[in-house]
Image 1 (tube, rainbow, N blue to C red):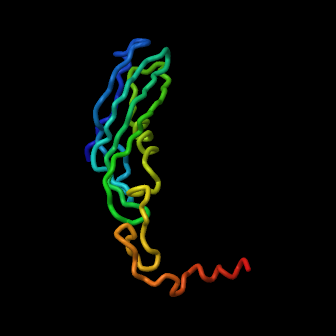
Image 2 (cartoon, helix red, strand yellow):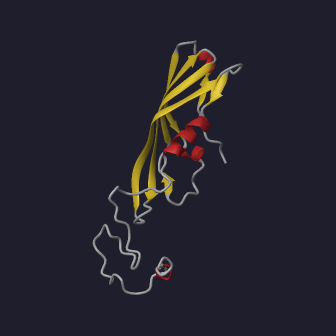
Amino acid sequence: METPARLIVDLGRLDDGKYEHLKGALDRSVLEIDDLEQLRPEGDLVYDLRCELLGDELLVRGTLRLACACLCSRCGQTYHTEFSEKAYCETFEMTGLDTLDLTESVREGIILALPSYPICKEDCKGICLQCGQDLNAGPCTCAKGEGNSPWDALDGWMA
């Protein structure tokens, strides 16, 4: 298996107070999130970063974007969206280094922007807990209140 490209900054090209603009994409395999059920990257991790050497520190800030196919936590439908970290900012100590690999930091930045429970839209109604009907498509036809719920046993506890 081929190793994916890394995001490396050559510090020799930076003088104190000057910056370098990095723009491009990293293969989605660097994210190592292929085993998630609810979220699947559909494209590469796109970055637009400004790297600035300030004394013994490198300041990196910019934006990160990732297109994904998601499984809605409420209704179970697949939808497509793009997640972004618009205020990515990280500092690195540079004492004695010639290059710096930003790949892990950028990976963490976009993963933190991903939702734990993705939803297709804010007003998603989910599914009926009795019949499984997608309530976004319309109301269900099951009779509410009929049948036994697994929670019925708890109703008498607080009485």
